[in-house]
Length: 157
Image 1 (cartoon, helix red, strand yellow):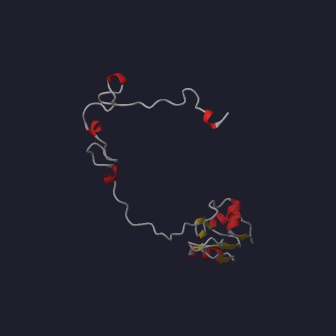
Image 2 (cartoon, rainbow, N blue to C red):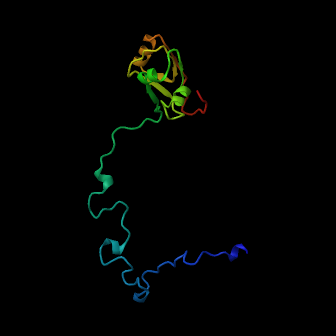
Image 3 (tube, helix red, strand yellow):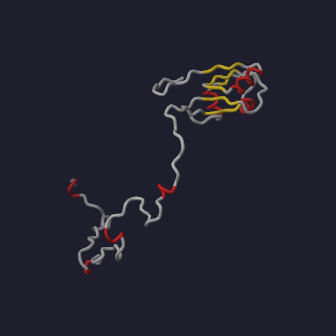
């Protein structure tokens, strides 16, 4: 068997309907476009709703803009750290991922100050809120800020 001997299975390909070729062909006269109206005459612009104000003109434009250099952090509250780690533990982004406290593997980690911290923890993250920093240091723990990756680099922190 050669490649030119191959052909599709019977019934796999249906012949194209030839419209506008006379009444006997079954799709003659109006060729499936009905009678009169803009649909019978020519193409209608994309988004045309029959004279109704189109959706793209009904909706308001969004205010402001999205900054190109915005950093999306994976966030964790100190209350969650208190529940997940033992006293004196070292908390790193890898440990947080292993415990399921953050999901996105490539996102920088930010520690937020919601909740109470009763344990002495050593926390390494890319960013801290002032509240989180003060709660960790008040509990006798230490805070270590990891360097953030620049937008164009592929280096891991």
